[in-house]
Amino acid sequence: MLAACLLLASACSRQPEVQTSANAEQAEPAAPAVQRKEQPQIDWSVVRLEAGDAWIDCGPDYARGDGRPVLSLAYVDLRNAMQDCRSTGLLRLRYKGKVTTSFAALAERAGKVASDLGIGKRILDIDSAGGHVEAAIRAGDAIGENDWTIWVRDDSVCHSACVLLLAAGDMRVIAGPVGIHRMIRVGSSATSRKELGEELRKVSDELRSYLERNGASAEVYDLMTTVPNRTLRLLTPEDLENYGLSGANAVEDDLNRIRLARRCGNDFVRRRDAFRRAYDAQCLQPADAAEQDVVDINACGLQLRSQYRFPDAQCPDESPMAELDGEILDIPAIATLPEAPAMDDGEAAENDQAPR
Image (cartoon, rainbow, N blue to C red; front, side):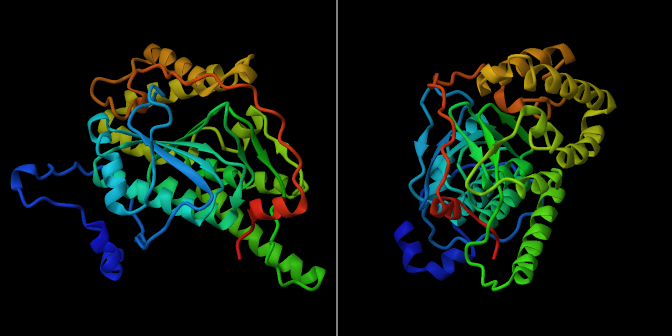
């Protein structure tokens, strides 16, 4: 089937076909529809991860490590890699590398395949020092459209362009360092300050629009412009909360309130709101926050939610932290990260390219 797709690229790129068997008894049952948002058309032409690695697993713990390596972004191959996740209802996608156009394609395609398979709970476990801003915006929009929770483990980082991804997640659980700096335009054709200013104004407008439509504060972009590109400013838990980059996404939360009130009732919404406030205060910003990992944050939330009668009998899948299914994560201990090294001009320019 894959060989046929490569030979008939034009046909396969328009609409991916799922492998079928000549034996009707082996045909897969239809997956339930879980997509709640309108999806853009996806380009299924051949793409390979060129600046990072990805893994897929179907559970919230790390008993099997990061999971199965993603070796192909073809529809059929991603579908095969996610088949086991149909029974758990959860997809955990681990990505380590730069934010590039191929990562954006991975984000778009993984969300589409998960929807086709009826996998409603999705976790993006990210470790990235940055990349291309335009790719981060494209990937972020796909993340926002496909209901992803984002993790930054204590053995991971999320710097510069990666921070834009945090803006799009439905829920953000952050234990590792998050850093920002000034975005630069490597391919600039400006010959004067005036021309450069016009280019930067266009970049500013695009980034502000992206942040605002995803519920994050555009002020984080203002802060980025004050940090030289060769350095990093690490954001505190308070910064992340104030800029709308951690915990529940405000825009998604507003949409969910309307939907949940209809389906689960006003009492459910009140309990969920009370849980969210307690979660933010007790789990995301405790006195020993510097010593926490994702496992500690999630364990805190799972223990706390029972006080608010979650998971709810009528709406278990809509209950807070439903993607964990009551499990305590088992993430291997990792040595303390060294401080982020200063980057030279070439590396900084490569890591953060602004939209053209």
